[in-house]
Every structure is written in structure tokens, then in C-alpha cells.
Length: 187
Image (cartoon, rainbow, N blue to C red):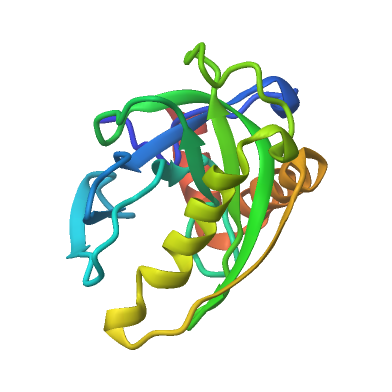
């Protein structure tokens, strides 16, 4: 069985696009998370607040961040997609966020296969209301759980691609990922 975190290649140049594995469809109140061992999705919780995900939400394969998870990505598009769908995306920006676990960057990307979004190349081109919705969602979604979230400013695609490359290097350098890569190489 293919594992969505470990078995999907992320090829250069990432500026032209990369695969994003979607865990949560746009519009959902269900918070799904990848089970790191099996590669299947599990329901983490139903959101406590009266909000829903403003974009398709998932991760970039073969990335690793300080929180022990792959790098988060929000892929903007017209429609929700099914969980575990691989979307071809391009980073237009990054949003830095702090929660109870520390710094948690969220790459803001567009779907390269959605004609309404594929032309965007920089976060400043997006409608301001879209950015307000993204920020407000993350400020509010843990409020009724009595958890604090601080959303910092958005940065552009240069910073987003830098965060992606750092997370890809983090995956390659992480000791727990080495046995997985060695097993794949052996066949």
C-alpha cells in the first residue's frame, strides 16, 4: 500500500508546482489527520467552533516540521475535494501561526487545475476577503476548546517555497525517516 506521506515524490522546481495531499475538504467541520503509521485518515475531532475549513487542507509529502508533522498546506480552489486526493498546487504565500505546540506554518497554495485560481502567483493578488477568511478561521477554530492561536502576517511565495524546502530537508535529515527510505530503496 502506498503511504501518502512517504511515497509521493516532490520534484523540483517546486515554484512550478508540487503535490499536496488533502486531509480535509473545503467546507468541512471534521478535522481529519493522517495516521502516521498506516497512512490512513482518522477523525481527530469535529471542530468545536461554528466554523468550517475555508480551503482544502492537507500536507506536502516528504516534509517534516518541528511539530513532528508534515508541512501544512491550504489549497485554494472552487470546489472541495475528497480526502487523500493528491492536488497539483503552487505556493502563493505562507501564514505563520503559533498554537500550544509552537510555530506552525501554513503554506497558502492554489490549485493548478482550477481555472479560477491557476493564474494567481502571489498572495497579494488574492482577494483581501479570502485572506481575512483564512486568518479568521485559524484565530477562531480552537476558541471553544480554550486553546490560544496567534496568526502572524502573511508572506509571499519566496518565503513559502523557502519553508517548503526547509521542510523537505527536515524530512531527509530526520533519523526516524531514514529506515523508511532505506526500506523503499531495497524494494
